[in-house]
Image: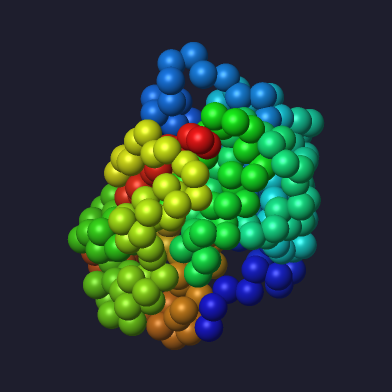
Length: 260
């Protein structure tokens, strides 16, 4: 079974955590020093986690776009204290946003859900101002197939269930394909960087396992039935140390591109 992003019971699965402050600092380090953005679009915003992170990083105004009404309900609740964030329903192919409205567009953890990169990147180009920045963050097959560890918990998913590894490889785009699609849709790639993002910091293993049990923010776990999920949690429980705080990290690749 795959996650149903439209199901009301899943509206908070991508809204119940905050982006680690290090993410904003990492993004800032990849951009020209002193670069300031007035208006950003967060495409595939989910629960608004990174819409908030953009504002926290200094962006004046953010518009979050998602195809799911349920996700947007969770995002509005999550961002209710942020007056400069608004949300609207749309897709990566048809955002419903105006031409050349933004100086920054973010597509984080989006493109692995899409088959048509060209249409997605063309739409981003349309809503960006001239010389606007496009930040694409996603995992490549090389990112996901790293060994499991105390920090890289995701790696244990694929050690335990080969079918999850197959699913991940099939839905992840390779670097060369992403580069070609960006360039074909009139973007100049200025940086391509692999980096580790802190996903969450857990005071105990029990809290991590609870997140896994509820599949919080982990669409890949919806490929498992409840029995398989229990087996995975037991497997990870054996792998991780007792009575110790855990800092979980995920490996990503980021592309920084500029509209021609």
